[in-house]
Image 1 (cartoon, rainbow, N blue to C red):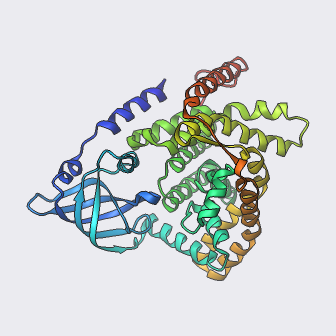
Image 2 (cartoon, rainbow, N blue to C red; image 1 turned 60 degrees about the vertical axis):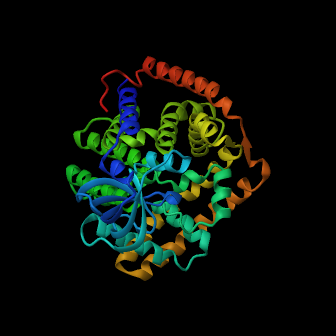
Length: 422
């Protein structure tokens, strides 16, 4: 109920908001802008938080909102630009910009950018730069996939690799989310084991914040980070964190902080996949008891996530991957080693570049395996099936019924007791 209310409130707020930049952009003025890159939105450009904007014949505005701008640089870069402020239209591209949180578009005539100095943003920039240097000797797609697994940077992945990974149902690997956060938090808690519990939790929270700054505030990252923070808070208090309650709190926190994400397909896919795994993975794994347990758990998680996101995939893309369960099962053993070595290459490379390159070389066989799986199960014409978008609603009804059944079963077994600690 709380999630539904939060989603409704945030959707209304995201759809109806009209800030000072929206009104100013309608006049298409020439402006000087100073801001900070907040997020890299792929083909949509860079999302820049406007600290100050001065436009011809109009009052100067401070902290005015977000503009989409090409060539702003990495997250945290300081941007000084001169050009024209343009309003968002009604087309699909501008609609995507709105959903991403932009209020207007800035068409620059000149752009000057500078990397962040000091603070978490400065450290994050150093780590991103160290990972790029560490992976530079690797073959293009292998370097690109390692950066994608570690920090979600897919800029070096070639079009063929991107397409085959998508068709094989593996593109989620480079959209940093829950598994990456779990690896980061687990490594930090283990590394800080000699310290007391509260010190370990505080160190893990600081590391988690740095990881979010390095990767960027993508919807799946924010959802996973919020769930990680809830879990760490439960650990510090000595209470057990119920995954569904943690997911609910994470969604409310993320949407409350960034209401436009209520309209984000990325957040919907991330939350649906997580919910599917929480609800169905264990029951499915029990039915696969004839398989070795690690394989049963991996296949069950994949099938649960795919079932939960299928209505969204059909509604948005009109296609589903036929080979996704097999591809994810084959790729699974390589994901954690590649991710850990990629993160290690960034950390070590920031201190001693040869060490970073050695760790990147160590990760190369794992990313090569994932690329091979993607090519094997993503290249065939039958790997992805086109499905009429009209099937999305009936399938969503089926998934909703399965969710209700799983929740009733968990309550009956005491798995989700009202008032359980979360």
